[in-house]
Length: 130
Image: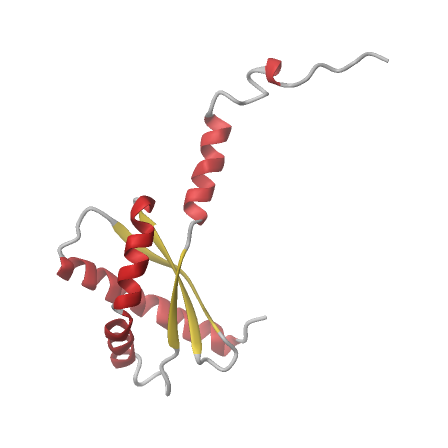
């Protein structure tokens, strides 16, 4: 279970990471995609922070994740500058791809697709009469 301190630090990091990542994308000239920070979780000693990033379109997710790992020192420095009055030590950032939106989209497509047994009862096996 997360402590209040962990939740506060994660919230501060998430807010600042959104600003820094969007600024970095604008400076790189990338306008055809959206990056959002869906969740940040910290360890109890606040030395590590897991950052879950959502990318749309999601086919470029691995490419963006690799780029974020390369830019980690720059991102960490920017966040440290913004949070210097709130945090003593800057946690080590670890970036992960959040594919929950893709998962939800897959469920949504299967529900709306032609494989809906409510609208097409022939998809279900017939019951045997006993």
